[in-house]
Image (cartoon, rainbow, N blue to C red; front, side, top):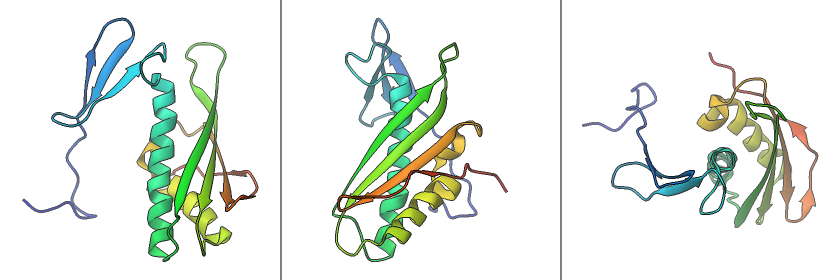
Length: 158
């Protein structure tokens, strides 16, 4: 079997969510570590929090990859996320703000901000899966120097 290439479709993702009582589910791929999702956020992340975490991790992977290819990998990165939800059901997200806090030598703001923009516009599959009317905003902080909060482009197919 050959590894997927840009022109070879990947197999579909498959996960299982096993109910553990109350509002708790253990989720994940077969024979892989599980994550606990808890609707009460007592023993694990709530499903909406898990969505924000997935978005942060997905975009973060793309930013690390982009900066590493530029030979300026971050020594550390933390992503703070705030999601604003509707007041009425469905209480979906309407605005998500992410702050990418980077530490490391040689990281240029223009490149870090471009990496964030490309993550949302082109590469992050979680961002591309969000409803297009959700406002995505991001800020890049490098070695303690905070940048501007910038509206990010939503993914557009094609």
